[in-house]
Every structure is written in C-alpha cells, then in structure tokens.
Length: 70
Image (cartoon, rainbow, N blue to C red; front, side, top):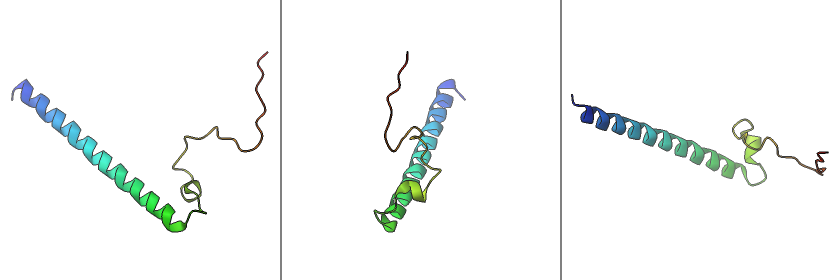
C-alpha cells in the first residue's frame, strides 16, 4: 500500500473518531440540559451534577477582600 493511501486512511480514521466523539458529547450535553429543564429553574445544574463541572474552582461567594502584595 502506498504511503499516500495510508495517510488518507489515517486522516479518515481520525476524522471519523472526532465525529463520533463530537456526537457523543453533544448527546450527553443535550441529555443533561433536558434533565435540568425537567427539574425546573430552581434546581441548578451544579446541584444535579456536582462533579461534572469543575472549571469554577475559584468561584467565591460573599465579600472578597483585596489581595495586597507588599
């Protein structure tokens, strides 16, 4: 098999894998949004899925004191 065909097949395999991962993530997100919508607006997504979203680790509620660096 020629190198160009191997490259084409590898690219197609990577693209197919990417599409599959994209579809699965989209389906999971759609299911989570539907579940949150079914629960009502009073129930936040972080209450239903506490370990799913950890990108706001530095989120702070309440007064924030300024940080002084001397």
